[in-house]
Figure 1 (tube, rainbow, N blue to C red):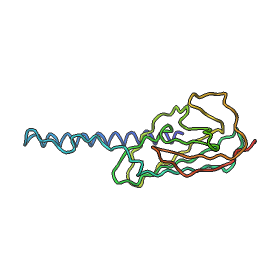
Figure 2 (tube, one colour):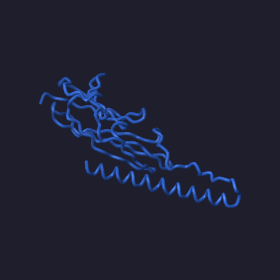
Figure 3 (cartoon, rainbow, N blue to C red):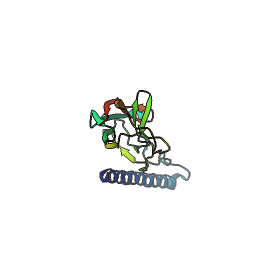
Figure 4 (spheres, rainbow, N blue to C red):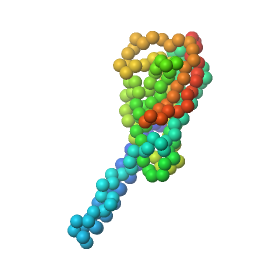
Length: 179
């Protein structure tokens, strides 16, 4: 968890440095153009740094640490996002945007977006960059209200996916046992 926080802080610092350097460059270009022509503006005058990544340039993958888990035991998913676009861009990769969801048939069992207290996680991507995190699940149900009296999981087959901006990964199928 500490590594995730350190990476998030580093990403924010990189994002800030790139944004500030572009703003300074833009301001200098604008003032240089203004000295000779009075009202001319640089084409970059409105540039505020990297734009949000297009979901089309991102690929998502999800894997589970186990193929079987006892109800009440912890299970971790590995979530990865890779960027293959051309221009640097930003992504909010917090667990309410890059959402891991566990399902049983059409029943939504658990979501990383429910009761998330970590908030946003700003990342700056360049071509080929990949972000990978571990998302724990304690094999219980969740809902948007963070209810604590939800029914226990039953033994059976479940699947998980990670989604971001309308895109989803391949399913990871696993078994939940009675322990």
